[in-house]
Amino acid sequence: MRKIVYPLAAFALLLSACDEIDIEKETPDCIRQKAINLSRETPCDEGAFVKEYLFQGRTVYVLSSGHCIADGSDEVVDENCNQLGYLGGFVGTTTINGESFAKAEFRRTIWQQATGG
Image 1: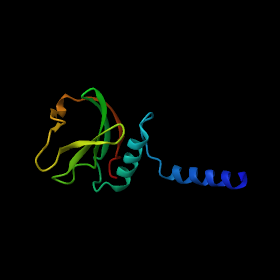
Image 2 (image 1 turned 60 degrees about the vertical axis):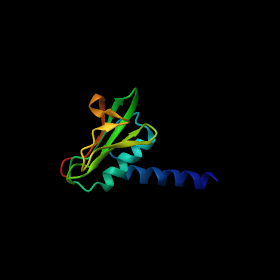
Image 3 (image 1 turned 135 degrees about the horizontal axis):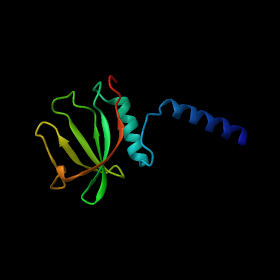
Image 4 (image 1 turned 30 degrees about the vertical axis):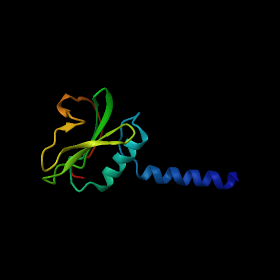
């Protein structure tokens, strides 16, 4: 059994290393996966990011695919990746759960797209 498990584990580590992006430590797994997906799928050449905030007494994350799309919006999720709402977009939404997101306290950038892709 070990003869099968060790090579499979090594192969899995090799595959995951190829997809590694620079994500801040102590980031929840679901947020880490969203950042990896965003790094692969963003339509913009620059400006995509995942940022952490304190909002309404809890940690939330803003996921942006960049602003190359005029009516694009940024998703706001909690640490379990539950969607709380969107900011920006065509109507310029600025509230989440009935409160202005301007009251959010920025904590850190989890991931930011390198300039030029």
